Length: 252
Ligand code: SF4
Ligand code: FES
Image (cartoon, rainbow, N blue to C red):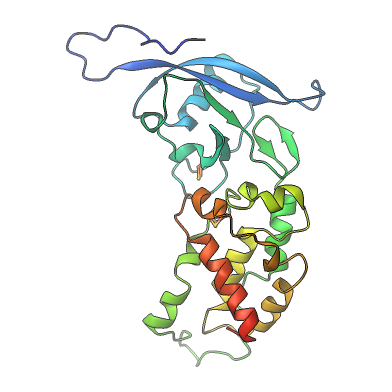
């Protein structure tokens, strides 16, 4: 394991590469009884991201390394993982923002069943998402040929929670979710918030009822892990608090 400069750059080279050590928590259910940590030294540039390092390992060292990714630009939400103990998107984590004098630890997000290497079973996460009815429910039709109108002020009320990309970084950073698989988790509440406070929607009461459950918002212990983990900068804890207040008020 070493973090030395990979090779002396040419005198006129403006860009220097580094050998960075990654310690990845691997698990192959067909072979391993328990996950194991494996070291890789990867030559990288400071402009590279953790996703680039994982690609290098997979394409040049060990093709069996398994992880999800799609867009590689922070939009699809498929590459949330724990990097040095923090939930982050691998495609949004620049090597230059990490301390490469030490190994970089990479492992799957917590609280969801581990399938292989950095891949978890997302089904419990999406089941909670589906439970809160994350779609517009309106009792009336818009005027023929017209859109449903909404003021700028009304739209702003839930603007923050429209940004969710369902990466699960928030939910899988929540200690309540780790210890209690029954909790809906922050992401489901964020996506309920997005419709509860939408002036065009008529089912806020239904969603508030669902979240006023023993598995709902009252499990939240306001640890702010979710807000810190969110790669979209959503104020997750604030959204959960607003849903709690709406339940106490008896409506949005
Ligand atoms: S609220 Fe943020 S962290 Fe949570 S699922 Fe959505 S984008 Fe990911
Ligand atoms: S690969 Fe799509 S968000 Fe990272």
